[in-house]
Length: 200
Image (cartoon, rainbow, N blue to C red; front, side):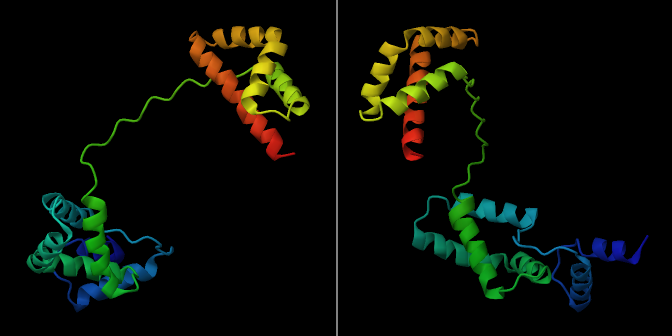
């Protein structure tokens, strides 16, 4: 076993650091090749902060602050350990660590839900026929003097054949809801209308 592995294993304990421990931490820190831009709390400390924040989740600001002061007094040993760990990792402002802990408890953990939301299923993408896009672009170039809504109605009257073809192509993708198809074509027209006019 290498001496550096022994030093790293020695630092995993949770009692207050002594001078020898600080030298070990500085040795480990000096061997780090990368700069830390975002200093995170340990999992154990975050669990303590989370528990405190959830207990006082609905406290008013003043009550929360009083409970925070009491909690920091009762848990000064773990706060000291966490502060010394962050400083050993290169955290610059010692006075800012207390503020970082308070803000984490008050504004992050207090509002964090214990249940992860299920990701919403993604809607099926509806692709549009390139011929329809070309016809839309051509129609917009010629009829850019009227409102998008009126231009779309005019486009539908002038391009029935291309629309029927595109609707058939969309239906072949498994989309049979006529309302959805109409919304897709209308949205495509309006988006291209604003894109072409903006880039003009």
